[in-house]
Amino acid sequence: MATRNPFPSRIDFGLSGPAPRDLLAILAVLFVTFSLWFFESTQAIPAALILSPEVWRTAQVWRLATYPFVAVGGGGIWFLLELLILYMFGKDVYFGLYRRHFWRLIAFSALGAGLVAVGVHALLSLTGAMSIPQPFVLMLAPRFLVVIFIAAFATAHADATILLFFILPIRARWFLWIELLFAFVGFLGSHDLPGFLGICTAVGISFLYIRSSGSIRKGGRRTLREMRLRLERWWIQKKLERNRRKRGFRVIDGDKDRNVRKGPWVN
Image (cartoon, rainbow, N blue to C red):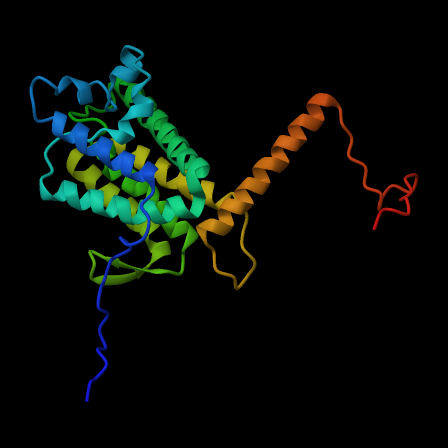
């Protein structure tokens, strides 16, 4: 007599289903820049794109836009593991927010974190308050994107359970604090205060961006898809308000304005 196998036949860890092209492109760019770093003839390419003090020293502002997608330094198997984690969380965030809000999340978090980190480093350097041997080391890719995606996931699915190190079950909402704890431990070892504050800024912006869609009714499950719809509605409302102020339009509500009468064709 055949017995039913109590164990699942396949465990995919979220790797099944369609893969977002945008996310695959990010992974490809990270892998290419990571590979270029190990050759002397090509090392200058990723070196010119990562976040560095040259942003404020010589106005190389393009680094603020490129640094999240440039992987440098040694990582070995850990680099591949970071790419796997990036894909797992990035896929959920992408299909929850879709392309427009997915890229806005990355852009706002990266730009805000980069400006804070560069500003702090410039202030510390000009005042001589603190010497930082390796600034922005905590904000290297792909770790930085992992921080953004985990923060977005933890905000949207606060009650979900995530296996920390694939072993310890922890509520997703606690990963916001766990990320900050890991960043603080990294700061203790590297003394990278600008990078630490940049990570804190990225987590905060990711949290606020997802929460800006408004709270879900009490008892309902907060999902990225619901938040995306609320974000789009909020964005359209703001756009209509700007157009109304710019062109002098006035919206008339027939239910509130007694001088406006509804015709027989209006339900």
